[in-house]
Length: 133
Ligand SMILES: [Cu+2]
Image: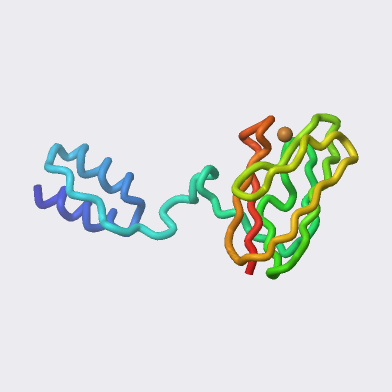
């Protein structure tokens, strides 16, 4: 097992998955993975952070809000504009727009700081947020 232990040490610098695979191949007990292994793999797309964009106009196009994460100062009126031929709305928390057809807009004035998450209730996979600071 000395060989295997040495291999494990060398592989410690590599990804946890590779190190564990090598150790498992030796037939020995599999060590617990390190608590942290920074940069070992890219973040999954599902949890990738959306970069907030300072914007008071949110365009709805191709079944997505753009920017998906907008930031505005308190007191800003944000306007959503639907460019799609499909109808969309803005729904979440205090945000309750009517259905917007192509070319229609809807505005909401944010008077309190906070993060406001919303969806299109017609297409709930469409997600957006406005962070008011
Ligand atoms: Cu929609």
